[in-house]
Image 1 (cartoon, protein in one colour):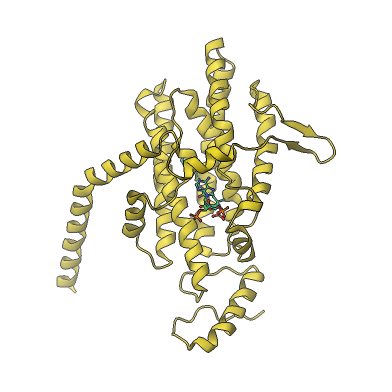
Image 2 (image 1 turned 180 degrees about the vertical axis):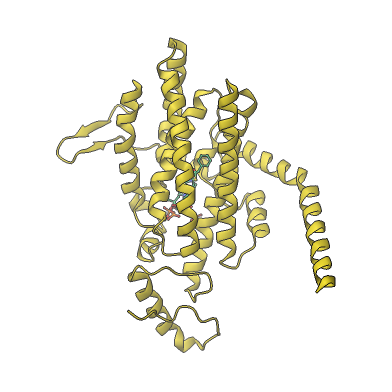
Length: 328
Ligand code: FAQ
């Protein structure tokens, strides 16, 4: 098959756009990747910037609920593992900002939007982590849900995003296992530890299901994103896959999923689950979750406190460039 012309950068008259669009659509339909320098419809580019930047912000804000447990982790091993995990999340944020930059937006611009409160990040990171079991629940459920969503994104039509997802998924799968292992230790422990694990599951279950976004009937972007193969599996289908995979894990832990409507449907082989608390989801998205204000305040403080590091890195890089140009 010949490769369609999706790589030229030369501006073309508007009349040619329909033909370019048709070539682009055929390219995507043929499961070919779209690369950074390729021609792409403006709406495709904007959709990707929206999704990738929200994803990057989620990784960065997502460091906060776990970060505040690094000094309090119960053993040196747990501390080292948690520190490595939080560091991984920072790395994921950086790959994702870099992937967004390939679409012609700067990282500084995206971070300004986050700090100004005009950009979204995942609802899940607006919930508190009052006990050590929350760190187990985040790894088990939040990373578990993130992987379910991101494995599908490894087949995203946009090459730089799809490739970033491959490495991120591998790292997230370690994160999921460390979380499950914390839950396993607690659930095999004393009564107070089992109660702590159950309490964390009670608080993280519904917010984890909300990570997959609104139901398909209310998802504004899904139809177009699926057509462009940015999203490969719908919000509801991913949520169902997550429930089907996670309920047996909860049973193995001896914990009860806090949903009175949960039952295995023998006819379909899937778990039927209750209605999500959508009102809570919308409130969190509006900025009224339990920790929205605290999270943004922490990010703004970190950004301000890091100003001297950015200034020093920039000065060093300018000095190196000046040296190189003098030498050449
Ligand atoms: N929270 O039409 P749809 C992680 C927004 S990474 C906040 O369905 P779409 C790793 C949505 O943006 C977790 N907002 O939208 C980790 C849109 O708003 P807009 C993040 C949400 O884009 C683990 C509006 O609602 N993962 O956890 C949420 O087609 C542990 C309409 O929704 C990703 O970002 C939500 N839950 O589908 C780190 C994966 N759901 O832009 C640290 C990539 C929806 O119109 C510790 N993203 N919205 O203002 C995606 O797959 C998609 O963007 C969805 C939403 C599925 C999240």
